[in-house]
Length: 473
Image 1 (cartoon, rainbow, N blue to C red):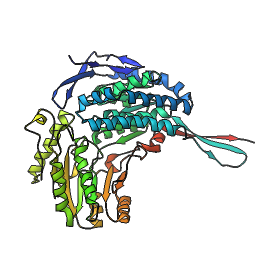
Image 2 (cartoon, helix red, strand yellow; image 1 turned 60 degrees about the vertical axis):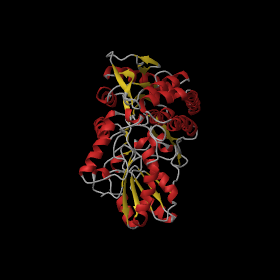
Image 3 (tube, one colour; image 1 turned 90 degrees about the horizontal axis):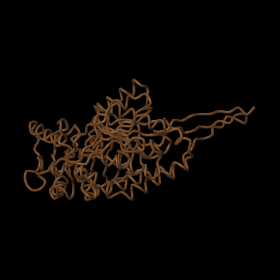
């Protein structure tokens, strides 16, 4: 019998008002998994009421006191890593190395914001000896954090840690496909000392939970990670209500490789776009732009490595049936448009991987930039390559996209690499494998969204700045 997982409201498990539950699927086997509560607007109302009741006292605590609680939450995640990894594995099929990295990063989010919280204050403004003027960072109140299915625990922690740090309460709505690790996180956080009601989790589908949550009059800010259409929809609700929203949406990110690059490292970076989370990440650099003089050689090296990736060892399956079908539809369209993959281009039809939602790692070499496979976010282990002639051509091709979340540049000429990085329309750009960590803000240009997650910028996203001025005369 599948295990049933209830909402987490007011510091305890809470059954859905409807009495209904939603099935989940193990994407490795396509066998039924656990069930999660099918939420409704009534459940959202209870969660928001719990958050509203708990938030004022939390906001009155000092930064040092809130910091200590967040450190305890980090400790609890660390201690509960094995169970969190198993819950996430059961509904995502991720490989062990990927799961461990994501749990470690979840711990790090709470440690980071617990730390920087104690050093981030308002500032004084010099208006002369007769006035004392200063600013304060104040919470919004109740924040709605709506997360996707590709990084359920990690992206929940990415929003929860800074939101809680500055004194907000949160109602989280995870994807109905991958809710269990977020529910367990809420239990661990409460048991670690986070006051009951500060973190609530309501599970269910978007129209039944996400829409009433975003539209609830007591919710004062929305943070969403997911698709562009859903982002537009939530932005329209936020605009009608005149509340701020952070949107981290899709991507079709370029990786630009010049002939004088450290090619071995650039090959590894290109392969990671299909291997990491099986390409199911908004920041995946799935448009491989290579200087024409080394294009064919470089692509051949990438294909050689890609063909040695093993399902279940180096990468996991598509996490949902719907995404599995969408990737196959992209293959069919590419074929209709005349594109032939250099490798891959299908699901597995033999071996253990054929039982699950695994897609063969795929490379389309030398494609036309107008093809759908080259322009739309596939969200699977699919890389497209295109040659460029010079720096100006590389820049034009890198920016020839509706998205702007991340880009990667590889160049033996560091000045050229930095010059290009400063001209690419993207919220993050790495040059020769530069590190992007919790400290580096993430956010989009163009249709990749707006607002910033991670870094100090996220702390300020979840806080309002108040100016106070006292006359001393």
